[in-house]
Amino acid sequence: MTVLTEDIRQSLLHLPADDRLTLAHDLLTSVSDAPDMDEEVESAWGVEIRRRINHLVSGTVETIPGHAHRERMAMLRAAAHDAAVLA
Picture 1 (cartoon, rainbow, N blue to C red):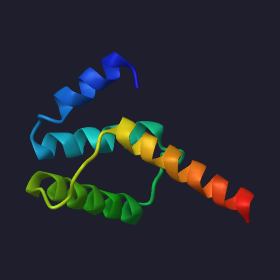
Picture 2 (spheres, rainbow, N blue to C red):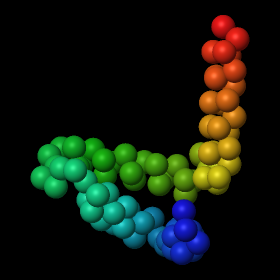
Picture 3 (cartoon, rainbow, N blue to C red):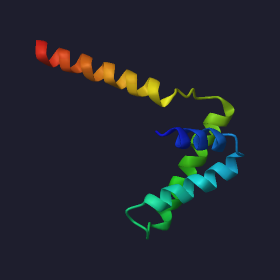
């Protein structure tokens, strides 16, 4: 992620949840392979996005920085590789 992208991301995280939902929808739509997405599917994604944002806002889930996640995944891949080599 570029510095500019990270700055934008940090700024957006301070917006009200409804604004973030609208932006999330717009961004997802902009990269969708299926511009004529079925209304039922689109509605289900809207529900899921709201559910996830509500979990974040309420503090029922804990977020981790992207770099920490990538480091953990790299360690897990290395461990899996080592286990496969030893098998």
